[in-house]
Length: 257
Image (cartoon, rainbow, N blue to C red):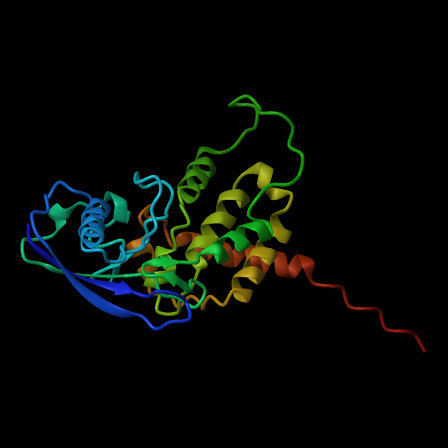
């Protein structure tokens, strides 16, 4: 395969970036997208040019590091697929491919295709965990959890925090990510102790990080590589309303005359 790549190049957060075009040939359709980028970088190094910086780690669709916008779609054209699971057979010989970083105020570009997504880490640090003592590891059937709740919790726990939902949303909303983490723990007995504090803290941190509001266009669900359902956003809204009502300070009694 012969390809023309249009890649976003940006040396630092302070400098302006631009699309730069590169030509590749003899690309195997069996290569992954990241292996194709490796070939590009080998070519650039041979020409004594700076390689393209991009994030990757497991290359197995688990870690969420390989976050790229490919031809205008987060993680590329295949649904339920991370960038590292995308193969070049999804493209045709002679294709022009546009490769950009995830763009959001809360995901500032560090260099080229690498963005700073530590805002997600701070949201998790605000409450996406169980801190109370729950004892040792119980037997599988020791805690009676309805199968429906257990299955839903597992579905929401599949979120890898890649940020595709933010990149696809016109408002750069992180609602799908936050709702998946809140819903996962709210459904399980171990997470119910900190239920109210958790959702208030995580939503508060999400707003503080500068993410936008959800406008229900469902683009987040469409590009999520783990196909997290937007039903989690409805659950988040219910959890937040419940917590806000329970945490509302009681009005002071009026003094008698």
